[in-house]
View (spheres, rainbow, N blue to C red):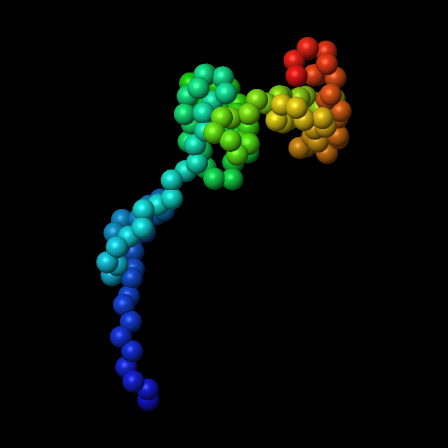
Amino acid sequence: RGPAVDTASIFFVENPDGTIDSIAGADTLAPPPANPRLWCHHCNTQLEYTAGASYVQCFLCRTMNAVTGSQVGGRTMNMLCTLCGTSNLAPWGTAYVRCGQCNTVSDVTHIYTSSGMR
């Protein structure tokens, strides 16, 4: 038999909805990580989103913002697949969009030249 080892037990009570009710056995508790934030490119409202999200919809003006890594959300475009009609969201400036439903790849460069917006 080896020497008795005294280890601290840390436990928590988790509610059925996944929230933590109480924690015991810890001297300190690290705060939960803050969610990343960006500013809506249309109305300049600050938006908080879940890490790993690709797009964030502004709750104020309903504009979709692409998560680009900068502090301001990127413009987006919505392209309907010519084959199956599925709505596909892509960052503005994208040359090709792959349909999320049928995998058809569409060249969308004509959008930038025909609208005069670049």
